[in-house]
Image (cartoon, rainbow, N blue to C red; front, side, top):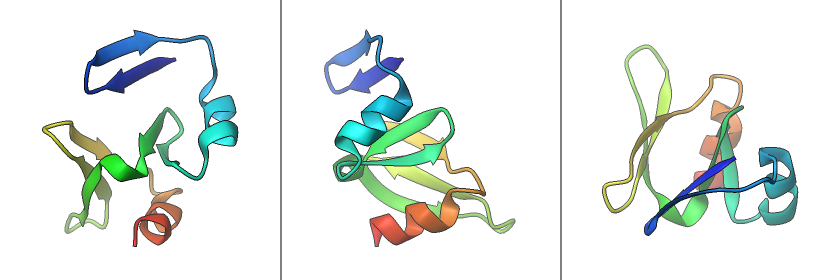
Amino acid sequence: TTVRHTGGEDLIEDSLRSLEDEFGARFVRVHRSALVAVAQVDSVERDPDGQCAVNLRHGGGRLQVSRRLAAEVLRRLR
């Protein structure tokens, strides 16, 4: 698993599932292959097609939210 943070990125052996179980209150799953720290989410946007994306703080970029997880992401981030 690649962990991206303000200091760069690190490769760890933990699965996303184990990270989600351990730190679930501080992270939200936005895609089957991505967890995001709730504190690092700047905004959530929905495009005209209804697809959601999270914009990350400090120039961290933008991540698409899977349609299956969109309702849970919106609930957690409100």
